Length: 288
Ligand code: PAF
Image (tube, rainbow, N blue to C red; front, side, top):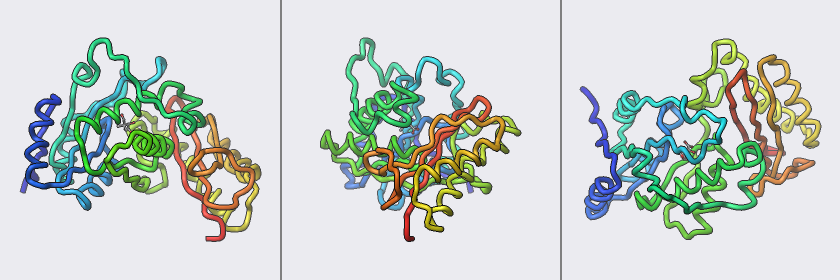
């Protein structure tokens, strides 16, 4: 049997009308914000929403304000038909896929900006990125008014920044962070993996390999962050197409770098493989 396709709406008016009915019926609304080009990672967020909510809204919007001037806004994959089919299979109820002009009015000049936690790592490589993310996510929160919203741990800093924003601005939506979904060889799923040539795809496995090595080293009692980063760097440098942007071991809440692993620690990295920028992370737990 053909699964039911979610309803597709493109305007804020239609979205609000539909969600008013849902709310009146006493149903709990879950929100999964995406930029489309959906993969199993996104679909796991939809499933998480379905587990704790009665009605799941997926937004598909390639948000121009989170791309830097030299980034891949124009080439970012746009695959609405395939996305709709995948969302039908996993039981999303409604898809909101607005045009740019629906989200950003002419003369738009209001920004939501999170301070310290948005500055290092991704913030230092992509200086205007988080301002675009927090602005659009706040807009989506206001448009949808969901009880809960679901984000992936793959974008660890993004999730932290959004949680900070939601706490600081008294957003009533619960923020859920769901585990990273990986390919069989360990590569974290990402819409940008589609850009990888076959040789770059083979080499991209060094990101997750370096994180597994960090976990093994910590399990074996290595607590010196410098040593661990050095060993991760060696793994990545073995791939000749890979260029490291950063590798950090940091406090998982403040993102301040640590010198010694004394409690739960974030290992995070950004690597350009051929022309594709990839990120990945894991939480290291000493004495596990
Ligand atoms: O993670 C993403 O896909 C985007 O940054 C988000 C949260 C949908 C905002 O555009």
